[in-house]
Image (cartoon, rainbow, N blue to C red; front, side, top):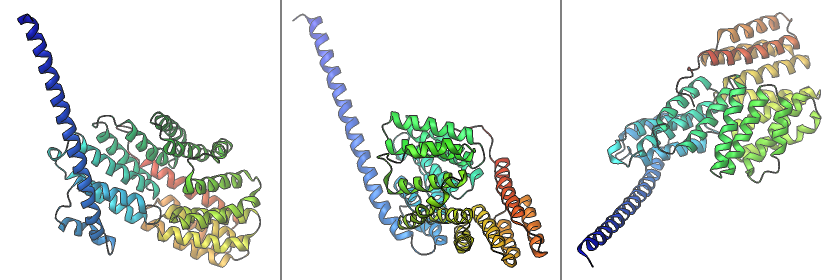
Length: 408
């Protein structure tokens, strides 16, 4: 073999050896990283089991005092636990998400592979956004979405994460009456989930798209989407109950066989409670009360609406609580029990004031209270107040929402 040929062969062998060594090092690093994540997660589970006991007000201080708490594993575990309790303990879920953000922001990038810390921070912010959306705090939700998007944009291959974030944003937007934007975001996110072969999240995106259409008064279109999903294999127990609830409220709004949705809504209440989804249970209870009113069964509606109102107040869901209370006031007037209406208005005003709600909503409620005290309240006046409270609380939220910069 000529010397030149030998040199070429040797260089090829050296290059192949170098490449194989690089692959071995990469595999070793990946294995070490996987082991680190596994070890951190295992330690984080034990740490959170110990720290997250007693009143939730104790949790942040106890976490600060616990050695070894500032890891990506703890941030992940806090976000996961936030997600698991948001349905029935939203205030505690928010506390956990904010603790996850604080831990993630204290992490040192040099302690983890590239992008790992950024992803932990963005995921914690996304969980905060989802909890705030669930609680009806939509401007704050959009702020968290914007912050999370800025971080995710620095993370390689984050399209899937950004699509999940878009769902949180879409839910906030539809509750701020930006329904066309919300529907488009959900539709685009759904297409991303299809590309990633994630059928459950694709199903969720279709549910949100239909909700945006519903909030935009396109009730027939929303009902068509929801009915098309009734036999979707990705429904699952929670999805099936959500779907039954949504189809029921469409039929109530359309005045279509309303008496036929009463029993399905009763089942939704039971099934949501069994699943631990207490806020959704209360929403189904509220809609059951309105369905009974539409059917003229006002006496049955009154205790149901009263219970829904109190449940919303206990969960700090003040806007839904105020609207349920106004439906209760209308039911009492229809049942010739006007004496309770002024006190209901008084209590709702106190709850909205405590929550920092708009003076316009409080003014509308004050006028209703005065009319009721003078024996001049009517069902039409209650409905007008209901529409005003719903509209102005959304307008206030929209006015205080962050600008478009940085949104996804």
